[in-house]
Length: 135
Ligand SMILES: [Zn+2]
Image 1 (cartoon, helix red, strand yellow):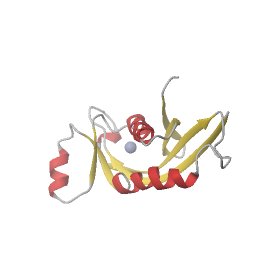
Image 2 (cartoon, helix red, strand yellow):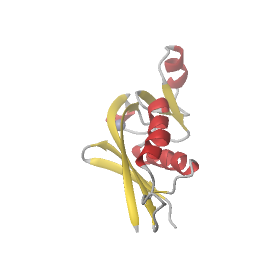
Image 3 (cartoon, helix red, strand yellow):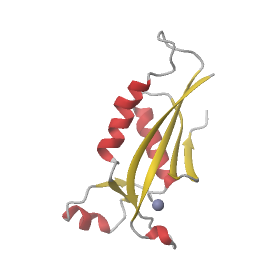
Image 4 (cartoon, helix red, strand yellow):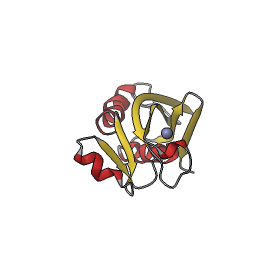
């Protein structure tokens, strides 16, 4: 089995709803995504996937919609206030935990016809959440 991993760094802010701790306040992270793509065979170029394809599809999507954005739950009452103030936001259906952001990225990558195996989101140098689907 072959596996390649694309790493994408981006900055984001968020806050967690229904959470009693520091993370209920708006704050930011220097996040690092690691996206694993696995294959039992290689293409005609000898690759699982060209890193350039990952860069052009996944990184450009992250850069355009999530980088330097506040990632908020659709239930967050701050959404209209921040919108009115011209602040760029990105809305998730669920609480914007590292787990839910990893899952969201996984689904987006998979929808680009990339055979993603796992997405890890490092929220800090010592903490990450991952999402994968069982085969
Ligand atoms: Zn946080």
